Length: 110
Image 1: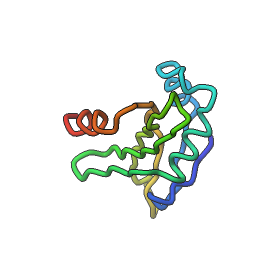
Image 2 (image 1 turned 90 degrees about the vertical axis):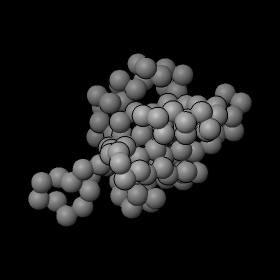
Image 3 (image 1 turned 30 degrees about the vertical axis):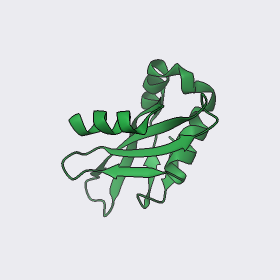
């Protein structure tokens, strides 16, 4: 199972094979560059959206060469493993959006 560094979270983010498979079934438009998009978005995000009232964290990066300019959104969750001293993070989903304001309004109403 790959794990990608995310300095903004101060941790590695796991990507389970079953999640990757499900994400690519739902978003085949990112299949050719999937690993690059996830790895770079987590390593160098433009925005990290954490909310105290929800377990998900939105990690976003703008890609000017992706469909004439789109954001990649990586949704991450975390929990504390029993007996572990630190949080464990993993990818829930990945998708692209053209407009960050649309993403923010969708995120705020969830």
